Each structure stands twice: as C-alpha cells, then as structure tokens.
Length: 336
Image 1 (cartoon, rainbow, N blue to C red):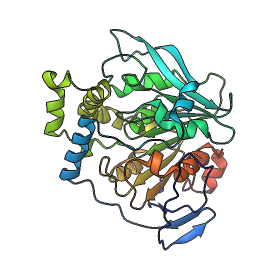
Image 2 (image 1 turned 30 degrees about the vertical axis):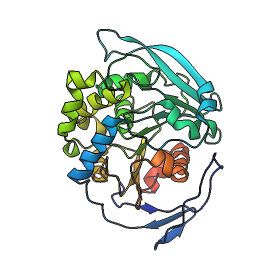
Image 3 (image 1 turned 180 degrees about the horizontal axis):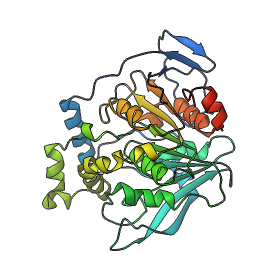
C-alpha cells in the first residue's frame, strides 16, 4: 500500500560539516513536527514548462557548469578501483571495464550510488568521504561515462542495470540503491530484476514516467553526426541516453510492480529538468513495494545531491533502517 500523500520536509539538524559548506537560510513552514522532520500536506507542483525544458537541453548540450560536491574531489578519487564486468546488454562486446569509488566501512550494509546523465562517480564525493555511519558506499562511473567503458553510449536501462548488478555482494548483506535523475530508472530496473537482493531504493529526482518524456529539436541537432563529433563524450552520450529514454521507460513500466523493496521518493517541487509529476506515476506503479514514502522539498530544483545533502543523508538512513514484515503490516505499509 503506497503512501499517496506527499510530504514537505524542512530539516533543522545539521549533518557532518563539509568543505566550504554554507548553511541555507531557514524557510518558513507550517506543519506538524515529528522528530527531526517538519511535515505538511501539499499538492503536486506543475510539470516543467516547454521553455525550461528547452533551456535544460541546451545547457546540457553546451556542457555548462552544474552544481557538484563540496568535498575535495581529488581526495575522493583516491578511492578509485577498476574491475572487469560482463554486460549482456552490450552483445557485441559484453566484457567492459567499470570504474568505481569505494568508501565507508568494508562489509557493512552496502549503499550503491548511481548518477544521472551526464555524470560521474566523483559527483558523490560528499557521501564517499563522509559516509553514512556503519555503511560501505560504492559509486560507479556508469558505462559510457567517466573512466568506465565503452566509449559510446549504452542507452539500454537493462544494460546499465547489469553494471550495478555486478556490484551486488554475494554474502547476503543489506543493499540500498540510490539513483539520481536517470539513475532512478536504472536502480528501479535492478530492484525489479533482483527483488530478493535489494532491501531499499531511494529515488532522488528520478525520471520514471515515459509520458513526461519528449525530445527537444536541439537534441536531434546534437545527435547529428557533424555536431556530435565535436561534443565531449559525456555530452554526446548523455544526449543519446535522453533520446532513447522514453522507449526505455516504457519497457520498464511493467516491471515496476515486481519491486519488493522499501521505497523512498525525494523530489523538489521546482525541478525544471525532471518534473515533480513523476512522483504520482511512481506512487501508482510501485504497487509491490514493501512501503513507499514520498518527500517533497518545497522550492528545490533538480540538483538535490548537492543542495539538499541533509535530506538525502536522512533518506539514506531511513532506507537502511531495517523494518520487518510484521512491523510494515502493523503500520499498514504507510511508513518505511
């Protein structure tokens, strides 16, 4: 049973300080305080306008500067490892090299962080250098990005899920998956393919509704070979993924009810790249989940891993908190 009411959250407790962190100004809020959270009801924010969709595409294609971690990326890069994996979704060359960053407590409950498009594992530096207590943390350069192969885009969600699946432990440890943006449908794919191996999924500004996906004319310009040749690899592959995303999400749609994990959805109401209307779709489709909690962040945009670190950390801790089936039943599956 899904928790259909959205939750608006403003957390007042600071987490471990990060490099050059500037606290955000407190916001006025009316609601009920429950522990660390201030909770209030609200309606869905409207989907992104066509203008902002176009601006988002243009910025992506031009490679404009985007928000990133406050922790020292050069220190996080020392956590890098590389391994060979088999990706059935790349039939012409299934063996690929996967670059990962590994931090936290070895053999602890495992948190796997999956970036959007474009992106790299180093974008999770804040969470790798200051990991959740007691957890092992792995962030990967998704196939086609960072130091992972192949050189070209891997647009199949199933193939991208193969890379994440290769990181799952074989010792039965608890596994929490967190996907940001296009990383959201990838972790959902993994959780649907391996329902007994994933304990919780955090969907952070995740794009899952195929009905909200459209291709802007600028994307076709970027895909035109004379233009594509001059684009950086990350931008070229990101554009290819976005063009293919609608069809890929349609394939994923019927798999979503197979997910049995605890689900935590976190989305900003001012997300102009992945509209908050995705939330209603996720709530409606994740019918097999152990429980679904929705957290809406008033006024926040798409870049939650970097502008809402406190909330993301608490979502991870909530995801990692073990909840038995009897406890879920007693709570009518309304809370995770």
